[in-house]
Length: 111
Image (tube, rainbow, N blue to C red; front, side, top):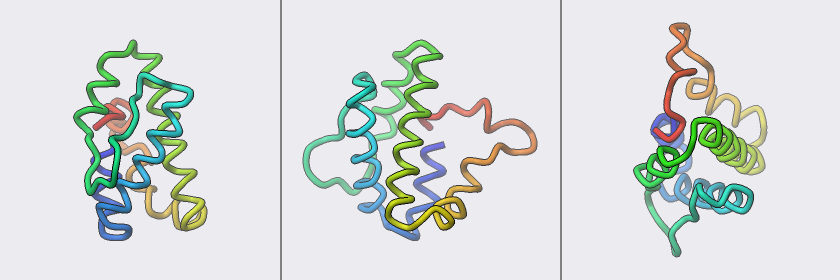
């Protein structure tokens, strides 16, 4: 899902914008869910999805789902605060809406 978000938003806010938004989301989420990890120090042009995947893989399914939901919610709220609710919904609708085949419900939130 995160790879899809990166693909969807890169043309609009650029890789550094996504990295900054993701880093802030990770930082804020890690306050309540420490296992999710903190972003690296300094500015980054990319996000480390492999580290996120590893953090999720080390958790029981329920904890992973809660962490994934919290991180995604934080990301959406930060994006919404920047561009508004309607545009956020339009930008992320293809990523967040379940596909007709049901694949989205089974997708690993860290990917």
